[in-house]
Amino acid sequence: MLRPKVPTNPMPTGIVTPPAVIEPTTVVRHPVAPDPTLVAPAPARPTVQLTPGAVIALVGGGTAVVLVVGAVLVSMLLAVAITGASLAICALVIRSLITADAKRH
Image 1 (cartoon, rainbow, N blue to C red):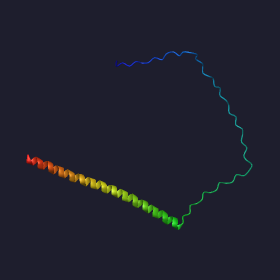
Image 2 (image 1 turned 135 degrees about the vertical axis):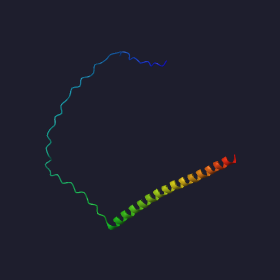
Image 3 (image 1 turned 90 degrees about the vertical axis):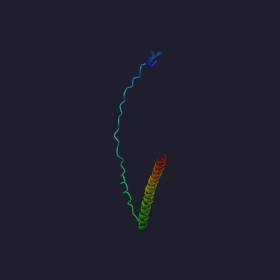
Image 4 (image 1 turned 120 degrees about the vertical axis):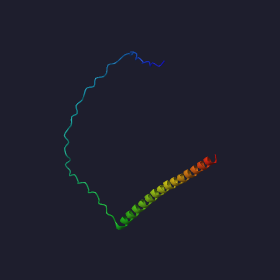
């Protein structure tokens, strides 16, 4: 019952064809003649020019991002602190209830 049976593969039936023979082919490359026309040089990348208004917008946007991220992190820290304090108060109340109950009996 607990011994696995290994399946046996039966012999193939029918006509078995031999594998096809694939002969390699050679690739002949012809030399490519350069185009007689002159190739224009690639245009230089345009430089980024910041106007005073754009600089003020970037500084304002960066400041807003820093303030939002800071507010989120501070609120998460505050949530953890409030949760810890409430758990500590609950533990004190439960401990006092258990000790008061133990003194009565």
